[in-house]
Image (cartoon, rainbow, N blue to C red; front, side, top):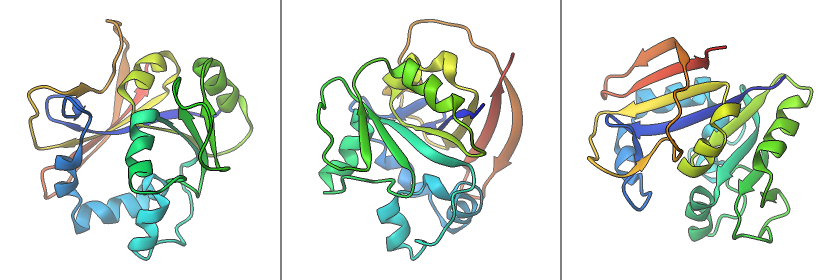
Length: 194
């Protein structure tokens, strides 16, 4: 069974963006050391257009071959005129308002998101599924998330968009690897406690 991994950036106080969802303040922490980590360990999490701009178009997918993102995350790319931000993977966008995909590589999941994720997880394959942003869809998929990779940046938002937009539900994970960087960022990996 393939894993669903919520690979997410957040502030020290657990927000993935400001109240409007903007997370650009976190981009300041993507320095040379941190980018080398992403290229080496999680190359597929770099958007296709970003990879091209950095001259990294030939990176192979190491962990994921499928991405699921929320409408707000997808809209960030659309505002830049990019209709397939992760063209190097199968792309799904969870949205109840976007009814037609602007790109043949992007499939819209309008309803039955949990069923679709279970279907994707049941596929054969060595690579997993990357859940990219979307507080609400992370909350909706909490019971399906097998792994958390939390990139914590040394900033405090005070308020904003939480990692999980869901009702109260105690869900246990086990800490795995912890990696620290000179810029103050910390990347923690957790596995679902079964």
